Image 1 (cartoon, rainbow, N blue to C red):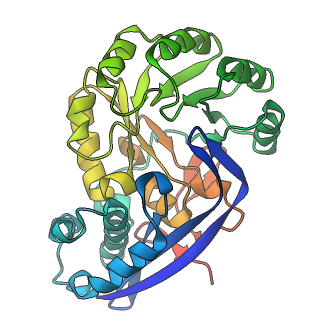
Image 2: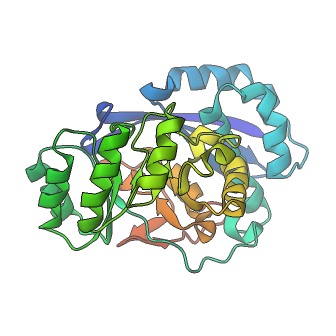
Length: 337
């Protein structure tokens, strides 16, 4: 098996702001694993909050290329377990390798990835479209630019209820709220009352990650479901979220890829938690991998590639929130030339 590394800068259609800051472009690394004339692709993007950079990714891939290229027809689950000791401190890179190997493995079997998993692409949730923090006028303009059945609205300002009140005047779509750790307990409970009146479906990660006591209070008093994001990074976090959140949002890059994400979803369901997969701002390489998990999910947030000026790949497409799978096998990805 051969490792090929591609690096890109993903430019955004609009500056993207959340409670932690603003970004206009996202550095991305694409891992390509090639064997017997076929290739699989996976992605990791740089994220200051998680101290990841493309330069570090590339350096680590080159350093470990012999380990990565060792191939003896392992299943994706076996390959992930094999790689874990070498990449345990870099879940983003482990994710890219896991996505690429799942893609390659299913292509070598002439199957789409969901077919290899014996999933049926039916009753899949619609994806939301994300509106970053901005002036109300610009947030409204972004909604009008992309009419969509579900919007995820980033909040974490002093005027959050006023923002949602104004946005509601311009759309009957479902709203989801993501505060990205920007609220306190009292604020969250109070906001949940008003947001429910405004047709909000749920609130994602309102409190800082270390406030588990506060999360319990919010869980017991909120008028809307609370979904964990930053509080649910890896597999061991799922059980912690039980009786503190109503559901979890799994990010492939944070947990280490498709392989652990499937286990996290299974565990969450066994605990009665709602399940969601979210994305980073990433290309159609990462987004297409997410799509194959959607038959398992209650909610999905896989709009990352829609936020780009320059998607660097083709794969799964989104039609008014609906997922349209590629005709290609594996995850269905093809890099643009």
